Each structure stands twice: as structure tokens, then as C-alpha cells.
Length: 144
Image (cartoon, rainbow, N blue to C red; front, side, top):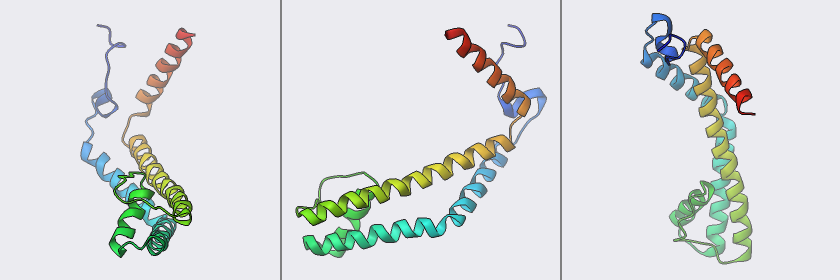
């Protein structure tokens, strides 16, 4: 096998041994720092989900726990179906809760992806990444 065709991970390229724990700690620091900075937005979404869930609870005459449980199951789009609203106003509010939940989940996913990308860029060999990008572009051009 030629030297170019062998696959090397960025963490061990050119004889450099990187500590995988450094990557993990960088990710964790970036993730929690981002969550801290986005805290007011995250708290807003959580509070709105709880308040709207409790409004639905009153309309449907559920217990406080059932309202809280249902609002988070709906917001996180799990939807077990064990508790469901029957009145039109409750159903309309459940759509709002689901949209807020998708926005909340989207923020968490975006923070996770961003933290991963930044940690990867910090702990990888840029020359290897550029070589990989070039090979992927060459492969894509060859498929057309």
C-alpha cells in the first residue's frame, strides 16, 4: 500500500500523539460555557413549556404532575399517548408547546454540534483535514 492511500486519524498524524481526554475536556468546557451563555433563552423555553402545560392541565383537569409530565413529553416530541388533551383549546396549546420544544431541542443540538466542531478543530491537524477535504472534493468530481 502506498503512503497516500493509508488512512490516518488526525490525532496520530505525523507521529503526533494527542490525548483524547483533552478533546473531551475541551468539548465539555465549550458545551457548558455555551449553555451558560444561552441560559436565559433556555430558561425562557423551559418556563413557557411549564406554564403552558399547567394551563392545559387546568383545562383538562389533570394533576399538577400529569400536566408537567405531559408538557415535557410533548415538548420533546416523545408523545407516549398515555395522556392527551381532549378539548380544542388544549390541543391548540399542545401545538405551541411542541413548537417551543422543537426550538429548545434545536438549540441544544446546535450547541452540541458547534462544541464538537470547535473541539475537533482545536485538537486536529489542519494539514490532514485539508488533505481529506481535497480527496473528498476529487471523489465528488469523479462521480459526476
